[in-house]
Length: 325
Image 1 (tube, helix red, strand yellow):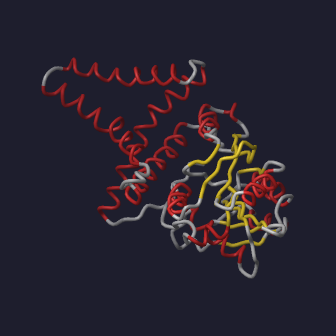
Image 2 (tube, rainbow, N blue to C red; image 1 turned 90 degrees about the vertical axis):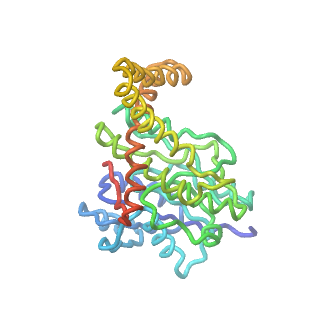
Image 3 (spheres, rainbow, N blue to C red; image 1 turned 120 degrees about the vertical axis):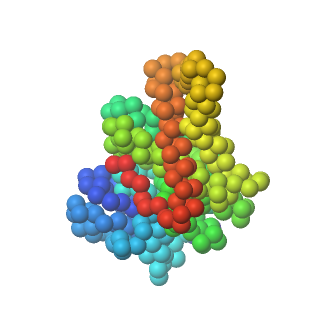
């Protein structure tokens, strides 16, 4: 590229309050233009975004909402009448870290085969709950060329055009699904060793954790249905693990107890044994034990998401947005 790249941002949100204010300020310092896509907020988010100088797109909420649909709408507004090279996607509950866009854009300029660059997303308040700490652990992904990214990332606009953007029908998991199609076009996805965003999951209750993990199971099943065939095998392993641990193993144990002896119920000890195995594998400290418990319990929530996806698919009933906040 023989000129300075034109970089914009698309922020999506719903009733993020002060978090959106932090997001707008942090993004405004690093890009030339911002589009904020609102999904039915009633907390003044639209006015806040306009006061910060962002263009605002208010989605028609009579149509099914998805984050993918919001990002597509934001990208369309951002590139209307503008020659934009890179777009920073970011959720309204995140704050962009200083210097991130400069680092990521320099990487994309130097690596013409790279469509996506993303960095370390951290939880703002991991000390507030075990669920926030689990999120922070999940965000710590391997560095280098990878298969997928999350919702915060700097992307090459041309690459997005090549694959027609995000799939607006997906209620979750739209970023990894996008990356499947990008890689099919020989585009690369890179995780950089650089701080990118602070995220506020604000997840303090078990019910929130369950909903979020249920949504993940739904995304696993839908992703496997779309791209589960070889060689991609997208989310097939994750879907199978949810079914095995969350449904088949419990059913088998109950069946054995019914057919042979109640003593077969002792086989349920496989679950605490799995917790011990995961905790010892990941460090043996208190955080490792927390994660192990949540990962094992989460398989049941993932299973309900998988089952819901297939039931709704059989009945022809689309799933609406699953919000955990």
